[in-house]
Length: 255
Image 1: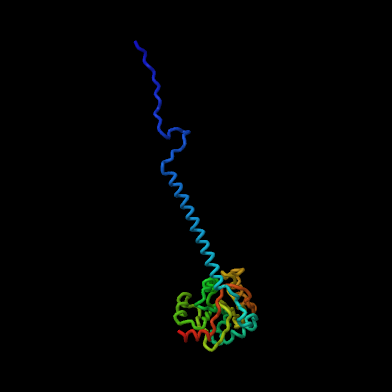
Image 2: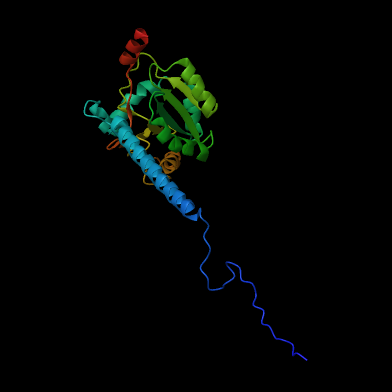
C-alpha cells in the first residue's frame, strides 16, 4: 500500500498583500502631484498680485485724498474755536428760530454735518455719523445736514431717502460765504447754540479716532455741564476741499 503523500499548499499571493510591501502607486499619481503643486503656485501668484494691486490702490487713494484738514491756503480763523463760532453764526441764523428755542428748552444738542456729495471720503466718516444717530434719540440730538453749495435737488433727495426723515437737510444758503476748509466735518452745539466742537470726524487715511465714544461723550457733556469750545483741525486725513459759493455758481453756469 502506498502511503498518502503530504503536500504543503502555499496561499496565492496578490500584489499588495504583503504587510511590509511599499504602497502601490498608479501610473497617474505623479501627474496628480505635479498638477496640485502647479495649482498652489498659481494661487500664490494670484494672491501676490491681489496684494500688490491693493497696496497700489491704497497708495493712489492716499495721494489723491489725504491732505491737511486746514491747508495753508485755507482761512486761518479755523485754527481758533472762538473765530469758528462767529463764522457759523450767519448759518445758524438761517435755521428755524422756533426749533432752536425748542432745542434749548429740551436740552437738545445740535449736530451740524457738513456734507459734500462729490467727496469720496464720505464713505470713511459715515460710520462715525451713523454711530451718533444710533446712540441718541431725536429729542436728544438734532441733526442738520449742511450740503455744499451747488448740491443738486436730486442729490439732496437721495440723501434723505438713504438716511431717513429724522434729519434736516439744507443746502448752504446763497449769500452766506462759509469758508470751510474741508469735509467731511462736523460741529456740535450746546442747547443754547454755543459751539462745543468743530473739526474732523477722524484723521488718517481711514478716518480713525482714538476712542469710538469720543463724540458721544461730547454730546452728553454738552447736554448737561457744557464742553469746549474745541477745534480739532490739526492733522492730515481723507478730506476734500469745501466748494465755496463762488466756484459752485461758476460751475453751474458752465453746465
